[in-house]
Length: 269
Ligand code: ADP
Image 1 (cartoon, rainbow, N blue to C red):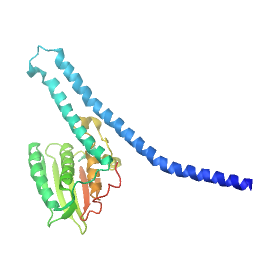
Image 2: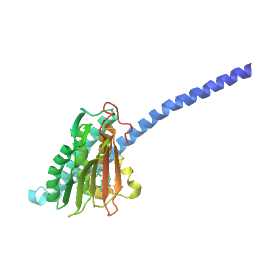
Image 3: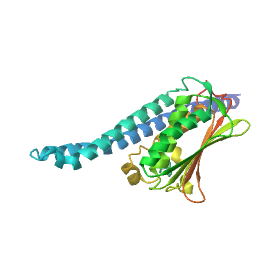
């Protein structure tokens, strides 16, 4: 009888341990993820702040110089302060996402309208940057349920990247197509491309293939994480592919009927 009781007690301790572990582990993981995010964010902010500080100190060192001679101090400080400002806005979006934010408003609209609006903006941007831009609108309307503003933001991220990672006279294309139940947006370029092993990693916060290059072009390493969150909120998928001819394709597939409209995205990197 005593042996039986001991066995029961040990079994219940074992079960409680397993159950407690199953509850605690996800909590631990989430705290660890939050800690890593804060650490990365602080680290990323430290560099531009250090640049600003050193340039301002440089300005103070030679007070007798004319302002025109101080360009080398002012320009980097201004560039880095703009980067901090972009990074803080992006961090605020991701913090809201982590707190469970979803789409403000879900309504039906034609993806063609979104494509047309983006094409007007980027036709001009591309020309200024000496790049070629082609827009392939859908042959018929592609009505989806979603948030226009969020998808506009997503396309700005993808188009800005296409411009950023493409050399002078590069080609950028935006196309919108559809199948029976999905709207498909593709942004492709013939720029530097993404290494095969990094195609999934680019959607991770702060991931950058080349930190130095990214720093020079003012990137924050957060754009594609936001793009993924917006896609998740629409119940869609986003993927990066390598173009055979060189360059990148980012493809977003959005269900025409958004069953996820009140739900949280399944997974947030
Ligand atoms: P970033 O601010 O660095 O552009 P993103 O999150 O938008 O941040 O992108 C993450 C990384 O993915 C970039 O640093 C870059 O290495 C890579 N990447 C994104 N888009 C492209 C593209 N169109 N061509 C080549 N590399 C890209």
